[in-house]
Each structure stands twice: as C-alpha cells, then as structure tokens.
Length: 150
Image 1: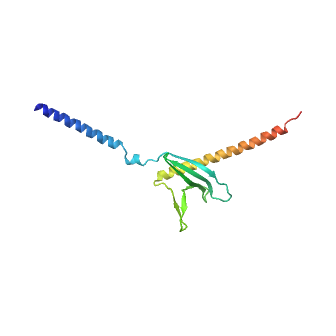
Image 2: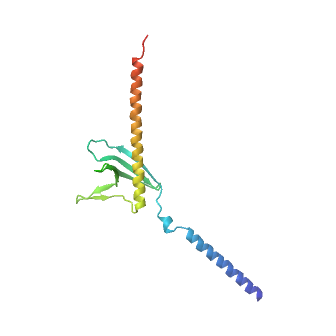
Image 3: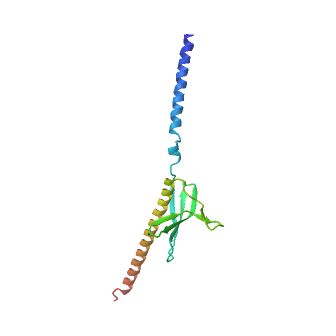
C-alpha cells in the first residue's frame, strides 16, 4: 500500500504542475491589452485635388491588417489651415453624411489619420521633386540649344 500512496502523491504533483502551466499559458495568451492593438496599416494617396478654393486636398485609401482595403478618405484643409482626414461617408436621404468606415478607438483613429497624412506629405514632396526635375530638364535643353555653334 505504501507504493500506491507514493504514486498518488506523484500523480497529484504532476497534475498540479500541469494546472499551473495551463494557467500561465492562459495568462500569456490573448489578454485584452494584446487583443485590441492597432493592426498593420498602410495608406496611399489615390489623387491630389488642386481645384482652386476646394478644401479637399487629396483622396486616399488605406489597407488595414493586410486584409481590408478602405477607399474614399479625404484629406481636407480646415479654416485654420490645418490638415484633417475625413472618413469615407455616404449621404443619406435626410441630407446627413454617415460614415462607411470609422475607427472605434482613439488609437485606431490616430493611426489611420497619421498614416494618411504622412502619405499626403510624401506625395506632395514627390510632386514638388518632379516639378523641380522638369524645370531643370527644360533649362538644360534650352542651354544645349543656345550653346556655342561653330
């Protein structure tokens, strides 16, 4: 009988270890802090809007978590001259606009807006660089035509 008691004690210790390991694994698994982290987001500017007097400066798209694409964000310039992002929206029959897509947390909203505004700034920089290159290209062509002739 002494043998049975030792086996029972060993079995209970093994079961206790397994329970502790399971509890540890559950804690390191998906906790609320891990569950709601902002996923990978990328943004691109689909087109720049250069109509005079328009508050809309660009139309953008975003990819969320490499699984969802959202089109129709608008980069606007408000009355203070600051840039802001409007979510894609549809006009209802009552004349109000209703968001088709929106972030449900402050972190999510800041992330989407930040990536879109960064993409807008990059697009503007690219456009200015292309304009400068085009101007330099025109100057060099003129210089070559006017150069000394013999």
